[in-house]
Image (tube, rainbow, N blue to C red):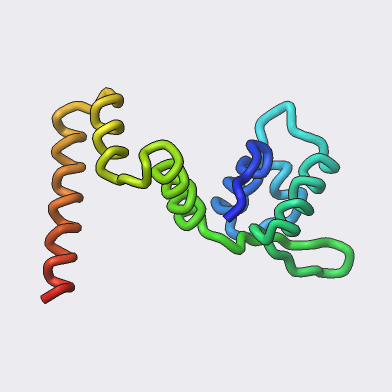
Length: 127
């Protein structure tokens, strides 16, 4: 999957949040000073070309919607980070993450519980 530029990611975040939106709706979601309609329109045309968003046409206006979920995009991006920076090893990534983040005991306990739940799910699935 292709990566998004910063501008493309900003537009996608709006569409993920709104689920469906017209160009005006997307521009309205940006903080002041808002980008020009033409700028957002160009970014959206690129996203259509990259097959990240689709649209329905109503008269002369398009209603845009994401073709890829935020979770799917994030999963693919994290997979690329793990592949490119951690030799494809999720273990190295987890080690880096836990060693280089300011995680408190509560956060580490929550991560531990999530991992334990996943282990149980996988064990039950394989039985």
